Image (cartoon, rainbow, N blue to C red; front, side, top):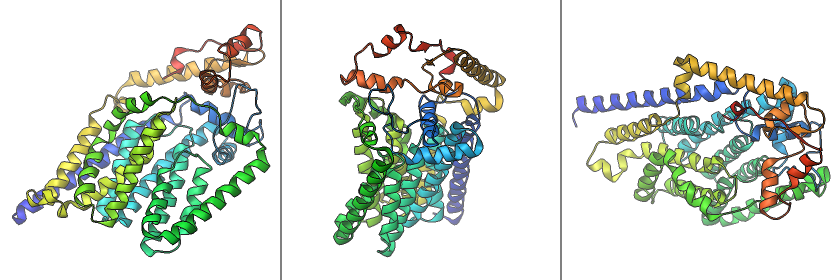
Length: 450
């Protein structure tokens, strides 16, 4: 290729990188703006806020048996969110801000992982932007929502980056193992990264794997012992709350892979053609486990898009590595590396644009959208006022409204549903409370549920 043609190709790639950065910034507008609104993003928000307050002493963090509520999460997130909530005066906002910060930390983790696996700075930026854009564009239900998953994954990502640094030096694995264990006490279903680390050690450093496994087991046992001392047997009872499972949920989740389809294709091609590279093999292990655990976790009732987030992380790393490896791919014998990079970036940007989610654009140009937001905030305020004025225990089955009203947390609809499905509660458990006058249901405004 001529020098002029090479310069032109490089310029086109630079333009596409700019487009990806712009699309990432545009996608982030809505979750950032929404974090400060008095609306319910998801039913998890009120649930998490109640338990963040519980960690600060409002009620038991792990309820006793026989109640219609349970806490099946480890304790650390509630102390973190509760502490920040006390500092800024709002546990929900605290959780939302931590969620937004977590996305930045994980994007940084993608950047560092690409660099530690052999990619250059530009490739690392591609991976980080792919992650940020994908999360803000397609997973807005979680980005900026009061939920501990992203917070835990951020800590787990820091642990994985520490592991990759230790791998490059072949020493200092202990810190990474302890960080991953700590992340597990924030949210306990983020398992792909520690599994990847342990399997890689088993395949390449068996002695170190034994040491790391013993350290992890000791740290986990110590953590559980501290939890038992702090919360008693109710901690384990809550953590083992029953949940229904169905294989059909996993099959139904196949369509969710569409949001990372471009990255998946890039990983599959690079993962196969460059499998002799130890760094690519590590990435392959990370993504194979990510796919398996995504489908395994999706068999659970009520498991949401967050089951995919470790896979999104792994595919983002693979996307950065695909960009970095363009010059040595078999396709580079037919097309220039810059042409391959341009096609990859173009496909990513087109997939980001091809979505029915238009909130960022409406936020910028549509006055009716702001009117709708105001109406939804007013509906929340009105519902909270009705709950406050209702004597005794009351709910509207909008957990955030119940939380904002100051009403005690007496019923968790999802927990009750799972208890009924698994045969631990009779189907009329809630209606009996209502009929006996022990619980009042306040009519919820439809605008509460966005």
